[in-house]
Length: 140
Image (cartoon, rainbow, N blue to C red; front, side, top):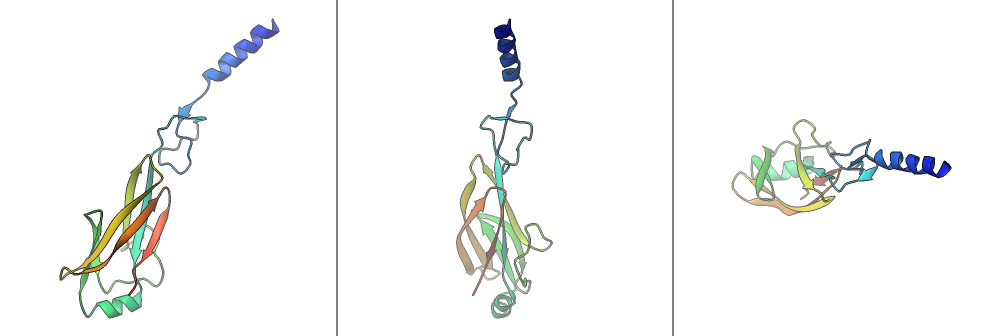
């Protein structure tokens, strides 16, 4: 009789498994899941910024910047808009980009910042990391 009870208990416990995304860094993390089913999806953010020294230097050449990531316009702002330190992602007046990473935890992307005369002021590669906000300071 004991072996029948043990077998029944094993069957019940196996039937209670909840599949889903078990990675807390994922946007679709399920606190109830105890078995990862490979469905995890991620996103990451980047905030671009520059300080007063850059604004003071660059304002003599341009009045506005347009920010591009992977060939898409992600925002624009006046050259005179600067920060004393890195803003938080999503902070009012910041140039924040959120990227859907799909089922990978990081993606590299190309960025450009172009002034109102069409001159590329900054360009480079930025990494979007799952569940993080990277601050990218643009310098002289």
